[in-house]
Image 1 (cartoon, rainbow, N blue to C red):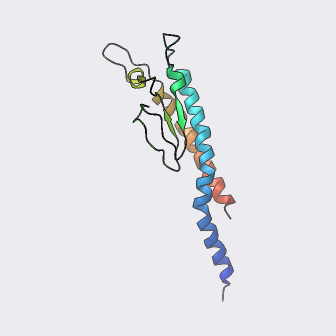
Image 2: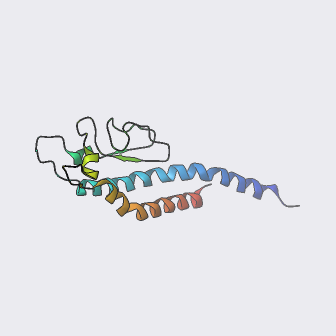
Image 3: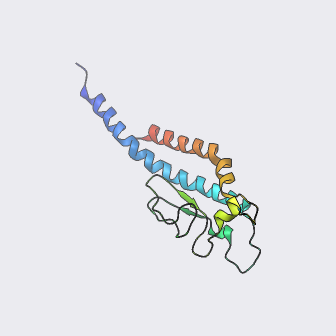
Length: 140
């Protein structure tokens, strides 16, 4: 009869994978979010008034379990789920990012948010998959 040691070892490893994957993916998410936010800051227009609050400086990364800044776009203040990172633009001083992104009847659109997301999407997904794959191999 087959030993039960192999099965219990396999079951233990399978239980460890979700925990290991969650631990491994969080730093990857933050690192990739930093890259996307840097691109957003590069694409964001400079504010015409030098003493005005700056759109570029309002771009923020919010980690898992943290609340996004009030008045941030998209969606205002929300708590970020466990395995997610939010990149927001805007805060209590800078309340116009959506107007820059989409434009108005008097102001042409100057997209900075979604072009950066689209530019990094494939590389970010690949990095996340690599992080999860490594965690699965290393799970004990």
